[in-house]
Image 1 (tube, rainbow, N blue to C red):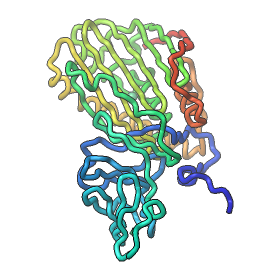
Image 2 (image 1 turned 180 degrees about the horizontal axis):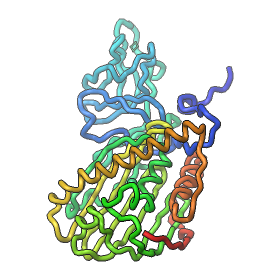
Image 3 (image 1 turned 30 degrees about the vertical axis):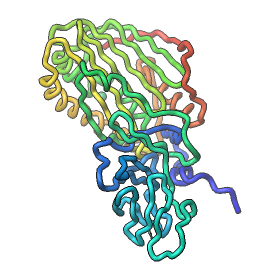
Image 4 (image 1 turned 180 degrees about the vertical axis):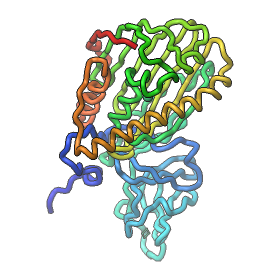
Length: 364
Ligand code: FES
Ligand SMILES: [Fe+2]
């Protein structure tokens, strides 16, 4: 019999030879859903184009199965959870969180737990999220990303879960791209033509990259004024951590600190889910005031980004591929691509070595 490629490769086989910034890294943890979403009913999710069903056993243990009953190929997500098993709605086969088949109605023998099993994926529950490892080749040797500050009581945390119509590369580049903020989000954060010359230091590791922006006065837009009414200087970092975490950090004025961590899930080649945690501690305003005002502004900013990503994705599709021209102020786009490609090849190991450093200047 011919050697068949693994299931994940068959489900996500490339459909086009055009140049598009799509990577498919299966050796990684991605957010499937928030813990609070996983209650009594099975939940349908898609990661890297793979249809999956998540469910929670009565013990609290979460499970992630391929959303396909091994018996006659109906979706397990239309089944029901009963105690510790997920029951298929067609003939009632029952599956535990590890995929093993525990009951076969009408069948007088013992179920072959392995032979009749559903395909299961490794799952972890951590910091309020259900993480899934979309690879059936064995237990992963890595852990999901540890979100900083989530356990720090001095900070307020606001969550925003959204789907962006773009590749993971385009979506993460957008989240970490400075030059578009003065144009696309004009007046909300930065203003066009402010004319501040700032220094940028880019630090590159084999599993992450960081850009530090120095010398920017507090931006004049709404968000800047809200975060630091008294002005001051901004200390700003943009970071990308493999496989799929975008992080933006601002320290503004004397004591305002905001950390925005986006855990990205590649739903499909051109669809990326962002589970974003905005953690902040502010010097001069009560957190609830800012939380109430920041949320709608954050939604507006995301809507503008999502519309631009949709335009970009549609045009790349129409032209049958992309053609990018970049300058050095497209600081992280190329770096993100380098890292995503390395992760897809499987040669991006975490390390604590000294980074390589690049200096540049830009105007904001
Ligand atoms: S199709 Fe699921 S039990 Fe038959
Ligand atoms: Fe943006």
